[in-house]
Amino acid sequence: MRIIILVLMFQNFLFSQDSLFWFDISKVRDSIPTTPMVIDKIFGTSQLKIIDSLRGVQVSTKEGYRLQLFESSTVDEAKKVMTKYGKSLKDTLYLVFDAPLYKVQYGDFVTKNQVENARINLRKRGFKNIWIIRSRINQKIISDTNKSGGNKR
Image 1: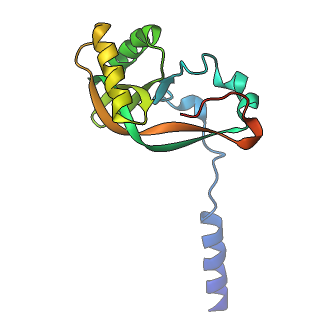
Image 2 (image 1 turned 180 degrees about the horizontal axis):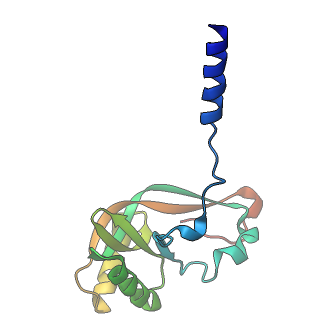
Image 3 (image 1 turned 90 degrees about the vertical axis):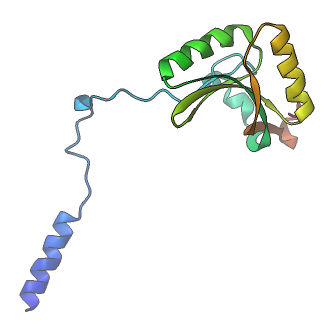
């Protein structure tokens, strides 16, 4: 009886090992997903280049507003529109997937007045069919160790 229990325990130990040595990444057919995508006009450069300068900055989220500029059921169409709008807009654009649609959203606004003014300005510039949505927005907080003229949003 002890031998059977010992064999079962040893067999359980052998088959419970989780290993990825058998996995070959070169045989994976799916491409790496590229969403979510953010065109960051605030910093204007690759985030990798400025990581060291941002050690005193923390990003948190809170309730706020964004402008939704476009929505589509295909990611390619949404990326084209995002690239097109990224050339003419000065704030951050977000590509958000909310099943089954890909949505292009603009900015991080704290108050309803701010987002309403931005919507009016974009309408004057020729943007059609944009609307205000409530969203979780990014809020940058400058820590006391790095208050060198940064703006709180």
